[in-house]
Amino acid sequence: MPHASPDTPFSLAGLMAEVSRAVPERIAIIAGPRRLTYRALHDRSTRLARHLVTAGVRPGENVAILAFNRAEWVESFLGILRAGAVPVNVNYRYVAGELRHVLADSHAVALIAEDSLATTVTSVLPDLPRLRHVLLLEDGTERDAALNGVDYEEALAAQGSEDSSKPELPVTSGEDHYLLYTGGTTGYPKGVLWRQADIFRAAVERRAPGSPRSRTPEDVAARAVRCFPQRMLVLGPLMHAAGQWNALSMLLCGKRVVLSTDRSFRPDRILELAHREGVHAVQLVGDAMARPLARHLLTEPGLCPELTSVRSGGTPLTPSVQALWRAWREDVVLADSYGGSETGVCGSATAPDTAATVADATDRRSFTMGGSIEVLDETLRPLPPGSPEVGRIARTGRIPMGYYNDPIATARTFPTDPEGRRWALSGDYGTRASDGSIVLLGRGSVVINTAGEKVYPEEVEAVIKSHPFVDDVIVVPAPDETLGQRVTALVSSTAESALDERALRAYCRGRLAGFKVPRTVHFVDRVRRTAVGKQDYRWAASVVDRSPSSAVRTLTGPSGL
Image 1 (tube, rainbow, N blue to C red):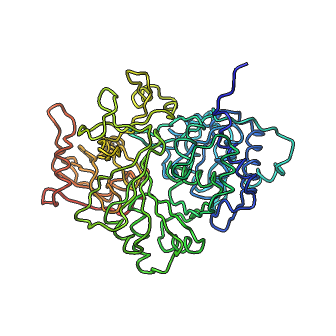
Image 2 (cartoon, rainbow, N blue to C red):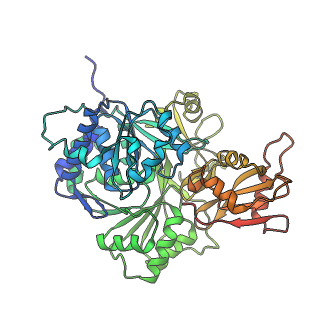
Image 3 (cartoon, rainbow, N blue to C red):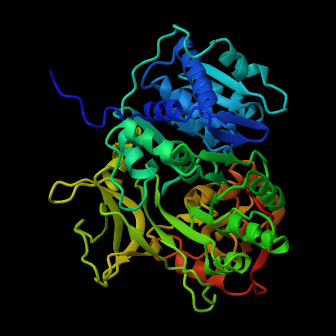
C-alpha cells in the first residue's frame, strides 16, 4: 500500500478547520456591519460546501467568485475548498469579453456573484455551456432573473447546522488544486495552477524569523493559540494574490482580518475604520493607496494610534511616499513584499528607519529573498553573489504545476534546467548583490504595472485600432507618482477625421476594464515603426518623456480605477 505524502494533511480547508477548532470564539473577519468568529466562519463555509455538493459540484471542479471585498468572499473561498472544488478568482472590473474568457477558460461549473456584477454574465451565458449553477449575493441592486440564480443566504440556511449528516463532504488533501487567475504577461488572464500544500508553504504560511515550518496541521493550530491577536486591514482586492494571501495567512494564524466594503477608495473612511477597529497593520497596493492615506493621516495625526506597520504587495512604495509615512510617524514599519502568482511570496524589503531624501533615493529596491530564489543567466544557471550580470529572478522547489489549459505558456514560464530542476520565472530581472540580496531592476517585457494591475499593451492597442477613426496606435507606460506607471496611448487618426479624445476613452471603456483604459492620450502625426514594421518603443518613450508640443495634443483622463 503506498504511503501518503507528507503534504497530504496540508489542505487549506483542513488547516482552517484546525485553527477554527483551536480559537473558535476569536473574531476572524470584520466586514462592514458583519463580525464573524472563527466558529461562525467555519459553520457558514461548511454550509456553503454542503450546498455546492448538493447542487452537483464534484471534487476537482472549478467554482468562480465574482465579488468585491466582503465577508462572503472569504466564506465562498473556504466553502468551495471544503467541497473539494477549486475557487476561481474573477476580477470585478472585467467587461463582458474578459468575463467570458475567464469563465470559459477555467471550465467553471458554478459561479458565486454579487447581483450588480452578475448582470454582465447574462450576456455571455450562451458561451458558457459548463456553467450550470449560480449563487447570488445581495448588494442592494436589482437581481437579474435571467441568471436563474439561487440566493446565497437562502442556500446556506437550507443546509442546517454543522453536524447535519447530509450531504457528506469529501476528504480534502494538500494534493488538491489551488487556481489563481492573473493578467500576467499575456493579453488574456491565465490560471496559475498550484497544489494546496505548495501554495501554503510558498505564500501563506506565516512564522517568526528562525522558527521551523509547521510539521502538522496541529502545529498550525497550536501557533494560532499562542499568537499575538494582531488585526490587519486588508485593502488589496481578495480577487488578487496580495490581498488573498495576506487574508489567508492572517486567518491561519488565528488573527483578525478587517475588510473595507466600500466600492470606492475613500481615505477618510478607511482610516476611520482602521482607527475604530484598532488595526495594527495595513496591507495595501503601492502608492495609489499609500499616498492618500498618509496625506490624510498628516491632517489628523491622532488617528490610528495602534497602527505600526504598512505592507505593500503588488507594487513597491516609492521613496516619496515612504517619506510621507515617516513624517506621520517615524517608527512606522514600511515593507514591500516581492512575489507573484507564479512564484508565491519570494521576499521583502523594509524601508530604512529614517526617511531618505527623495532626491537621493532610488526606486531600485534590494529584497531579502528565500533560499529557493535565484537570479538565473540565459542557461538557467544561478548567478553568484556579487555578479554584475543581470538575470531572470526565479524560484525552484515549491512552485506551480503550470498554467491551467496552456501547455505552451507552461513550458515557457516553468522551464527545466540542465540539472533537471524546474523553475518558475517571475518575468522580472535583477542582480545578485554580494550580501545575497536581490536588486530588482524591473520587468523584462512591456507589461504595464499600474497601481498593482498588470496591463498588456497589445490588448489595449487592439481595442483602439478597432475604432473607425484610428489609423495606428502604440501603448506604453509613463511614470506616475501615484500609480507607479500610467497607461499611455500614442494615436494617429485617419486623414478624414479629427478624433475626439474623450470619445476615444469612452470607446475603450466599453470594451476594457477601467484600469486598462489609457489615462493619457497623445495624438501624433504618425506612429513610428521600425524597419521590420514593429512599433518603435524607443521613439514612443521619448514622446512620453518630453513636454507636449504643437504636434502632440495631450489629454490626461480621470481615474479609471
